[in-house]
Amino acid sequence: MHLQILRRSAATAAALIAGVATAQQPPVVQGPESVNDWFKAGQQFIHDSKSVREFNRPAKNVILFVGDGMGVSTVTAARILEGQLAGKPGEENRLSFENFRDFPYLALSKTYSWDQQTSDSAPTMTAMSTGYKTREGMLSVNHSTARGECNASVIDANSVKTVLEYAAAMGKSTGIVSTARITHATPAALYAHTAVRDWEADANLPLTDVNTGATCRGSASAVKDIARQLIELSPTVRSSLKVALGGGRTYFLPNTVTDPEYPTQKGRRADGRNLAAEWVGTRGTMGAAAYAWNKAQFDAFEPAYGSYLLGLFEPSHVQFEADRARDPAGEPSLTEMTDKALRMLTKDHHGFFLHVEAGRIDHAHHGGNAKRALLETVEFSKTIRRTLEILKATGQLDDTLIIVTADHSHTFTIAGYPSRGNNILGLVREVPERDGAPLANASDANGLPYTTLGYINGPGYRSGARPNLTSVDTTDLNFLQEAAVPTGSETHAGEDVPIYARGPKAHLVGGSMEQNWIFHVMMEALRNGGHHRGRDRD
Image 1 (cartoon, rainbow, N blue to C red):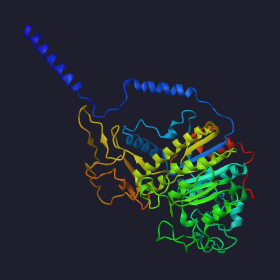
Image 2: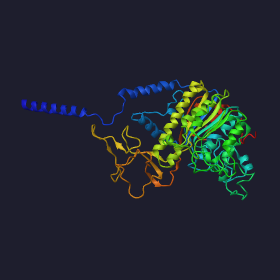
Image 3: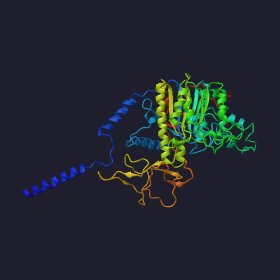
């Protein structure tokens, strides 16, 4: 009996010792939060939500931020990357526009167009700009427009007025900032009306109309190319548009002129016109006007004294943010361009409309290059953060409706079961089954590791058997994530995209929204009296 008690005591002691040993092994994956932090954060969310106010007064200013191709998975991955770049696990991070806690309104945007289940940027931006859904490839014309229509009178009759044109008619200043060509679909939808988004320079127009056979290129009756439309705006819009910054320099220069930054390239225009010089000439009659093609010229322009600024910093799109420092002549970041545009527009006591596009999120995704796409999104977040700072400093934050959204998404995925804090650009490493055990790469059915990020289609497709990525640096800037279907360019995706809003009338953003309703929210905020089907002929 006594011996049994001793044996039981010894066994109990051994079990306790083993339990202590096990308890002393910390989880190899740990978050920074304490147990109570989660509950306290939830209580703080409720407290903050109770103080949310609806601003029903009209907006003095409206800013439309578009992250081109910025679907939900892009927002999530960029949020994590931004946090990890700051030395944190990343998942707990929030991008600047996810912190609209003072006026937090959120919705989902249905991005299909009149004739596309999964759309391109022309009809999606047209929907946001005009309130109408239109056809593939068309900019700010209604869906009754024939594909390839190049007759100017037909285009004029089918044109639908944009929020920028309405703001100009109200006497407000306007501006456009983009990391894409300023003649590209998203920015162009605000000022151009055409059946084909690719008609960016006169040389891009077809020789004849595909429908009628009538002369198109060079004809006085043909629709103007997009670059020319930016220069030859109606007097009201021309006076209003104070700043246009982005890329696309060659579309404004004649084909006899060598690009100032790249001596092997020339302009694209066949009509001999230098539209950049014409910008300065036409705007110079209304105020101090300037054209900048490099960083030094951009920096030299002082908004306090200048009235009009055209900046074209690349022959095509501006550099990716990851590559910008290597630009030969230097070029401003999206944040710097937006900063200067705001300092010009906030001078107008009548208010302003500004569009800012992070256009190269889309281009990096098309290339199957997640790292560049996410770094573009992080810069986009930084731009919005700087915008809030400027508006607050000028006392205009509560007078400004800010909408942040995307035109469409991409086939970009976040998959596997990676552990918290796992490098978002790295291989999937799962939480081990036993605390204290090391992390190990997850593997597919063939025992090969795989990345957290991937694409359904695109240039990252590897033919044959999957490669062994064990020794591959998947965080390299030029690494292309794997794709399931081989396509030369990754495609857009058709799921809904988020809309974030703050400021006057932001409470109108909510639920599941048709993409064209975004226009109507902006117009309600601006409190315009009438929505016309055509453009003002001023």
